[in-house]
Length: 339
Ligand SMILES: C[S@@+](CC[C@H](N)C(=O)[O-])C[C@H]1O[C@@H](n2cnc3c(N)ncnc32)[C@H](O)[C@@H]1O
Image (cartoon, rainbow, N blue to C red; front, top):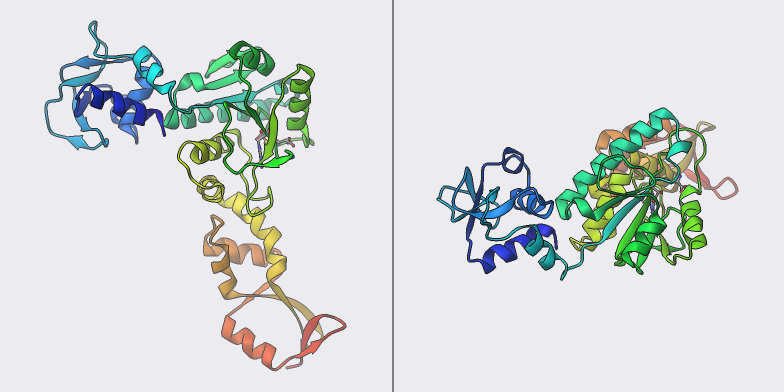
């Protein structure tokens, strides 16, 4: 469930079938009803009587009618932020906390990337929830809600069910729900920051805060899971709010660069070793590409990675022929052929 669904439920309760607005940033968004709900939840607009601008049905389709209500500013609103948030309280909308305790330990270039990822995380949050669900701790950057520390936020809110997302977490994330998911405000560009997320965990334990630490895996490995803060937030929200499985959530946010890293790791398991005229080759069947449909790859990524690794890609039928005419050398564990 997204905030949009709660908003639509309230509109239906008020027997509003069409909703209009003249706010450009809402009209131009990919998900008009979600954006309307975000404006209302953020207290920037209300649901008011009358028609303004363009009308939409409750599936978000543009409809040429005069609506009974609009999202905008007015004095006698039908409902606003308070009613919407009261209704949202009945549903599951977790906090996403980005803990920036290590902000100062980054170089300038990484800090800029971190700030960019935080603002992109707000974009993700707005596609599912509203701004107050994003909490940035130890860094007041004007995005989401600022708290001086994650421990203070958790104690102030009395939150008990917490998951720290950590590539070295003890458990595997399979869609477990929590009231709060913590992501490390860490960018890995320079130096070795391995294990820094676990350090955030240690700091929390020192403050007496209990949590589960979980790693997101793609087919048993963290290689191939994008590690940008916004992509981690999106994976979590796709899984816990939209009910997607982890693998498809990872695939939908995975860049081709990250997919290629995983391909590099997988390909050696798919090669055949052949000595041709005494020269050793590692060969990959052309059809192996189809086995990697769980990665965000194009065929040219497959060929380029094979070439980087020094593997020959051979048509399946040709390879069958070569193997048929070759001898199997048990000692060297490879085919041998002289042509
Ligand atoms: C760029 S990563 C930093 C990881 C850091 N170098 C470490 O070893 O802890 C930024 C954040 O994304 C989250 N993250 C990245 N990959 C993850 C994974 N596979 N599983 C769970 N969380 C992950 C963590 O919260 C992490 O702090």
